[in-house]
Image (cartoon, rainbow, N blue to C red; front, side, top):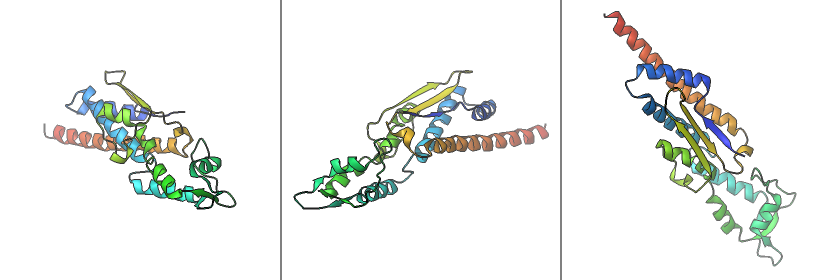
Length: 205
């Protein structure tokens, strides 16, 4: 399942159109610029957030809540044991009543930590198309698509994050909506500035 971020909500589009009327830049240039700002906001709001450290800490804590390192001959393979207690859709662990003894837990955690940022990387296609940069730690190859139409009146920026578990991340839709609202607030503030500036200029004529 995919998660979509689309620069075509009615409030946002209306604000953009009004803003474009006051700008000397072309509509196509403005659309790409605002789309770039939007995808930056979306990436910021996508887990684990702006800093990798928080995601790393959660991965380690999640795994250690279910597994414990052991040198016992009967210790399980860490990956196999992790899959047995891990939700295949969300990736989260349901901690068992008793931790499972596994081999080489530290090495397994190191490998899983490398995946921190994979969900953000699902926006990479949009970021490249719009000229935005993802954090270096979110540069994995992840599935995603983008549609960009800068011609009036069919202006549209639509980005899809096709990471398998994206739609299972709690509140991710709400986070994307927060990014859209941030863009709307930014456009509204700049529109107010232009409106006040034009009013001042008109008063001197």
